[in-house]
Length: 250
Length: 335
Image: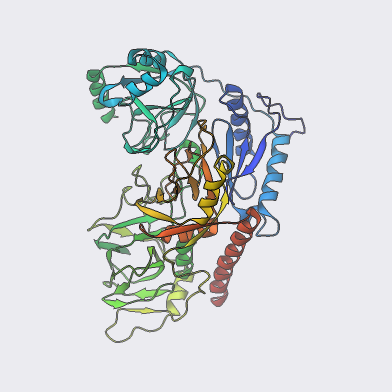
């Protein structure tokens, strides 16, 4: 282990620690979406993977946080000390000694075909109205941008993307839909993403991709990975049907 | 060595203690909703605590044992019978080949666990045998059990053989016998219908109005019909968040109480998504997951605030009780 001070790519003025219940601790690396915060979280995730502590269950990176799940029994050496204080102390030490490993830069851009609007994008009109734009302008802005896969979460293979044009930010629906189909492309606040499985969800739906994002039979069950870059390519319904049939053969 | 499903019941799935390590790929943990009940069941049949068993929901299945087995039933009281005769919960039971397990009226709680010596031996997917229905993975073909399914079981451990040999002889014309002892009620509680659920304030607790904070701790919440392994939607006082800034998605856990803008709380359970963007009002403490798992739609919950130190002290006490049961069973057979 190195004794050098923490040279993370992001300037973490202070990583804030707070509990999520009695078996998890949240490390907050920043308060807004940024590639720098993303880099700092990715670097510390790699460090934690290489230096696991006794009682570490797993960790979940998100936009500004890394949530670390632990077993209070093992962390406290079978109940010999206060688990949260112990785990916070261990994590502060790891933060202080962590050295950023070189990120393998992703250069390729993954293209995701999307059929916008109509039955596939029931909230496209609402998003357009909210932004004061036409639906076509929403499609143009959404498909023009290049996105960073910040994290996979919410459901298996579901990518949270950074890089949404600020004009398209739209609040979530007040109540989630009971069922959103796999492939649905949505917006929630300043985020855009793709539903990877049929699931309840509250995002504003603007289109759908025919590609599968998750398959437990694939060697790597998630199509996308944190750190990748991504672009949406508008397609029509005929192309959607063609690609969907092609996916079934995979 | 197998279990044959004659009737599947309302929802019967293969579960273990969950699939850890893949939440960063968005894959949920799953596993038993009442994990302590499954762990105790496994200990009673000489298994490792994490062995896979069956999670049986409200209206139980009918199962024929294809061979002689050592089994235990823990968790909810759903009126279990063997060959039509009532059988006890929370104790080792030996059954002859051909014996039929069935269930009757749900008496207390909603989830019973069937542990079998050797464990249910479905394939391990990404480190676990737990069924995750929504992604159709784990368990038996990623789905709930159906009539006609055959479930393989593993080789019982030496401890299982010793537990079995210590059971009473079969009575004439009876194809099963059960132990006369059970662990104490602190490890095998009878589920209560309208439980008090202890919780910690969540990360966004301070963003809710004082009135809503007070209402959360003081008012009852009804578990709505929209209640499954992913979570329960609760019906109760409208919970009002004072700030309307959109949150960035972050991790959510078993027991996270999140509140969509409509103001009706949702408590997340075993098949919860890995991350979410609704404000996290509270976090149920680990030792009360069992009570949460056993509550039924239509019943009410009340939340009671506890400190983190108390929550962890309660968790450590629970783990000491589980460890004591494991040691007691091992010591009896000099393992």
